Image (cartoon, rainbow, N blue to C red; front, side, top):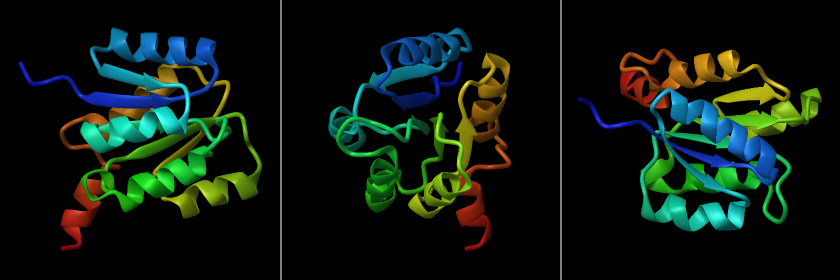
Length: 138
């Protein structure tokens, strides 16, 4: 049996954080959570993850800045990042792309859509995988 895919969720709303964790754990993902970017940074530096799911509006360091730090950290620079946020303005989506995200989803979101989007990055032949894009162009 292959190892579980590891996901780090960074979300400061405890209800949303618990709901996302439950949804993803039911699909047998190994889920780690952090309530702030400051809590997430030591995890990012000490563990490897297969996917990051970030809120944009976090207390302290924003999700955008956390994404930039993920992209600047060589072991995680190619790990997919999904923003899951209530910020739905086009300028926010553009900033998410500039920060290095792979996907920008707006809350509220159906559990089925979240699972489908996560699977797009974590299946063996994931069409949206950064690793596949970077190796295909090498």
